[in-house]
Length: 399
Image 1: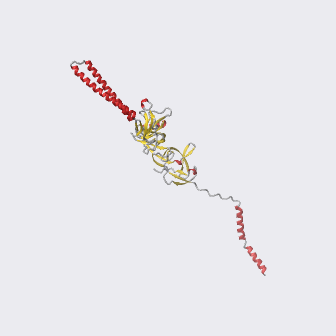
Image 2: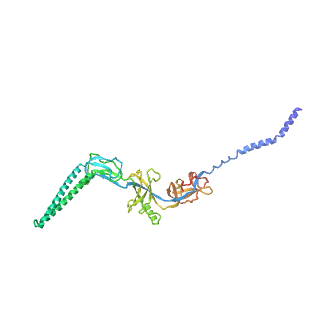
Image 3: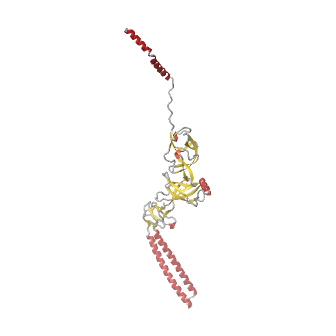
């Protein structure tokens, strides 16, 4: 009895199994079908992030830049005015000297002796003048009594004139002798920086009387100082046109401001004004020699140095400015990337102006409300979408 019961129980389990087998069969069929389906594509990356800013709008003035060389306002070559042996050098090489400072002492003894001789000659000439006066007075008294003739009176009068002439000559020789003594003490004719001494004590120097005066040293003034530069013809014509239109004052009658940048500097450090334009253009270079005077209160600039001169090139005007790093080059064009309202990138050709306080002036091609890509332009593609972040500060720093 037990075995049939077990068979019936097994039969009932089999009759209850079709739903389970169906599930297994369906799962297996699904696995087989999955082997033929391609892998799902990876999720698309988000648009690249860029930083945008609107152009800065402010009043600017164009500047033209030129290379110039500094020269002293005044320069003097100190030469010996009298000949003789140098006794001493009274200055330190390269020092600042003041007008009247003693520089050299030349042996004055020969000139002191010559002055004594001239003084003695003057005394003798004055004595002869007194004698000639007395003789003339006597002759005038005697001629009234006919004791002497008129001819004698004329001779005495001529002798007095000759004595006066000899006295004047002696006075002149004494003055020359005293000047020579003064010239033995060579003094600084102006205030400035002196060069090294070119003649040492014990050397013989030649004076100016023989036309080959010995050079002793030189002195240059430092404050203020000149900077000379050459203005090209195109800039000169443009500035002349602006002057005729009343948009820019002429540097011939107005001390237009200039800014000077020294070698190794990134921005101007000295200010000055134009004080000279030449009266003609150089035929060989087509340039106009110009000069500005610069303050040099710290005496840091020396004649012979080079500098970059910025000269005012326009009247003030309103302009749009962006960082210079936001400008790209497309073959021969300059372009900037802007983000349109739908967050796609567009390249706009622009016309560039000069740099102003680190920003580039955009003359044409941009509007004030354009969103310019100022950081991340290497990730921007024309027509593609980007994720924008607004710059923390305006594109220009100052407005």
